[in-house]
Length: 158
Image (tube, rainbow, N blue to C red; front, side, top):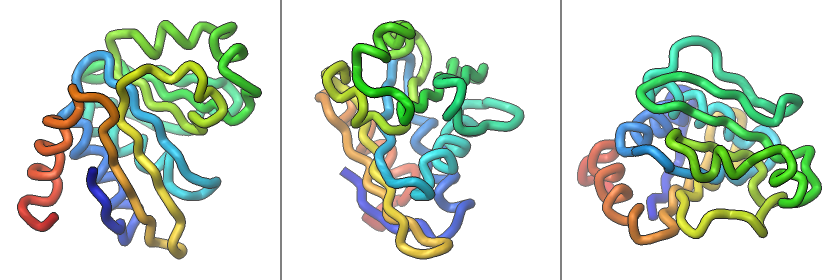
């Protein structure tokens, strides 16, 4: 697990970009945090780190935005869903078990259908520019990835 404080939008995006360097096909990232915590900002950095060019925005009204990069990026927003059944009805399995990197905002709405392994990123608003971030691997395949992420993003400072 990695805990740290980001002091700017750029630093939050860099964190996402550094994590992206470690990701492979089928990775699922669950983003937790209140409105304005920086979930979409983190996702923008992650998408840039995966080679996505162009504008990345929150899929609040479309439920999912797809981007092409080194790996496909599927950015889902479950805020408007009531439960996992609604997510299954729109075909979320295609994203949860696909060949791209799936990033889910408001995953707590669909907790009953989470995959068994994922990376949880929790963001908290501290002030206008500062955010607390926790990046936590869930599942054995992500433990080594987290060590590589720590080294690449922070060197030996954590």
